[in-house]
Length: 224
Image (cartoon, rainbow, N blue to C red; front, top):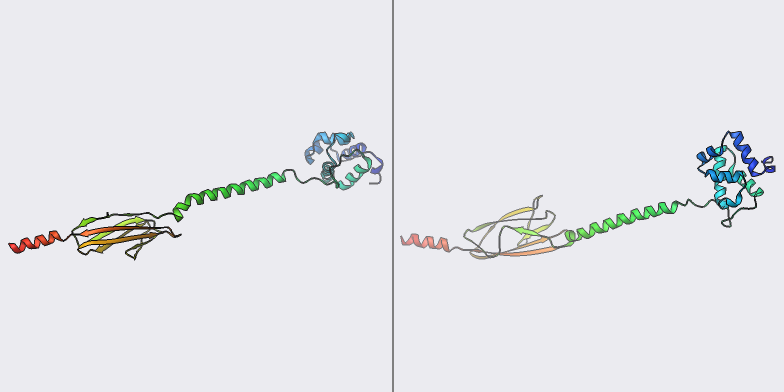
């Protein structure tokens, strides 16, 4: 750039734009640089321009568009311009000002996901760790007159169920049934249901098997 070094920035840019057949408006469109800033460069109004790191970035973009080394343009600009607002020890284009916003968006998204998971777990804890439920077709202290009793009910299919320590396996809908033999008098049935993660519930039902009706019938038959 030996020839260009003898020119000021205004004539340098004017010559470049003329050779490339570009206007300030078109250069602004293809580089994304404000048309106002380009006009300030052309008219050497340096005190109105942003700090040097931003201008450095502008030259890099301009160089890419017009096929000239942007670093050379920047060095030439520094040689000819003393009114440059410096922003730090090194004149480098600042990091993308939107990068922190993008990072924050990721943090916010992750935080929302974590909160949703926590809320879901909080609602599921009673289901996973709470006391399991079980429904039965028999009531405590029932009186029956037959020697067998069909016991049925419902619980979560994933639960472990025992009747008097004997395992019983609910179907896919959680339904279960078992026919139990009764002895005369009180019969005690203990139902224990456990959840996968340890929650447990125990119910006890006492069924009284009465044989008085059959005894009375036998006595009446013998008297006849």
